[in-house]
Figure 1: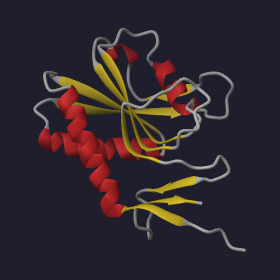
Figure 2 (figure 1 turned 90 degrees about the horizontal axis):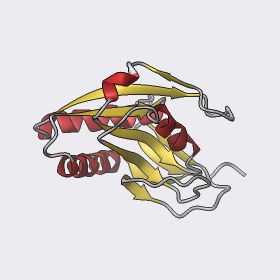
Figure 3 (figure 1 turned 60 degrees about the vertical axis):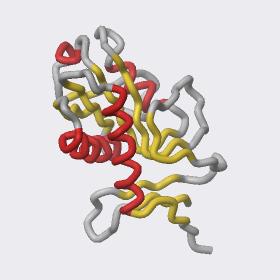
Length: 169
């Protein structure tokens, strides 16, 4: 029996979710001069890029994209960043990933900023699956899905020959 895929979000709906999140981020940070958007590679960074594009059009503040690469299979925090961590001192950080499942990836993402005094740290996910093993919560989520643990959420963004979509498999 072939894998059954259920379309959860199409390309237009994904953009609508990102637009809505951008307005929420704007409302939460209206008085800021600059915010830093930290995308977790690979797809969290793609969501972060799209969020930054929308904020650049609507927000009075500037935004800068940061990239975090995590060793997700590691039992301890192993992160590679494309910025000097001291640049984040007393700034607003928006940590972005595509799917929140157990919360481990976001927890590791938090770990990158533990030794720096921040003004605010907020989280963004496109899909919140509600299967948390870590005490992680999202500040902004595109959609919350009630799924069984065996199901898989597949986020397709920027793949050549495929339209952006979110599938439940």
